[in-house]
Image (cartoon, rainbow, N blue to C red; front, side, top):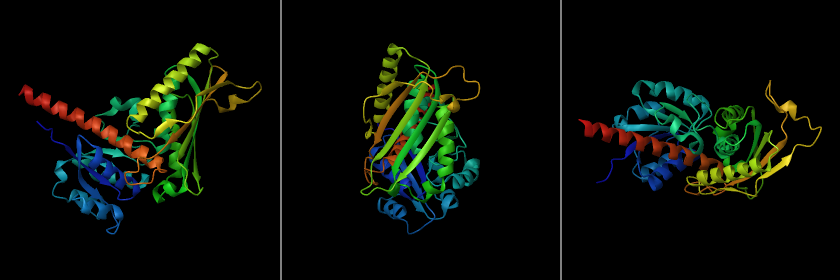
Length: 325
């Protein structure tokens, strides 16, 4: 007997929203497209949605609320901008829809599926952090589950061509949101995020670098850190197939006299002894976007992974209630 799929809406008919729509249609087992929402009637995303038989509106959230199947929609993905999401969340709040936010607005709790998928399955609004956060926070968490991380710094380098107007408008929010999530989800005592828009031609695949400072000289612990990172990379690659380590994890002593204390949070108990360096690559699945746009692919893949899990939980709960009647 087939399970009824949960209808979802995607707000934002740009690159991220369109890629997400394609993923739902091609890859989802628990979800189906209920609406594609935009504000430009001539956008490629809305045109593709219409060709695929997906209900569409170019009247934004007001148009979504007015669609005949609005009541049947369980999840709403927001792939617009931080500012737009705040307005969209206010407009949708009275209707009890579950929001999955792909902007840096950070109204709801941060979700990085490989790290805290189960913590917020029932939250009314979850935030998928940023592309750099989805790529690097799992690594910080992998280190911190073995030994405390005094400081974590991530550098996300993405092809300039893969950074649309929304990404560019949210650069400040990107660094602030990612740094906060490095601490609250990754477990670092202090976090910092840097984004680089690489103008190289041909465009380069997304590269991410993670630096963690730890106070642990033991070779046994270092081996445990490497093993933890490798397991975490495999966990992320389960829903982002193009996610991989570029080289073996490096753990090196902090040079004597290096002023790493300037990077630490106030009241840090110990001076770090070693630096963990991790180099990652994220190749996109090329469902809608080019393969070099791994930064967008990891966001849509993470959002889909969360929605799939949340929908599965909702279905199981409904089935349980049905059997107890």
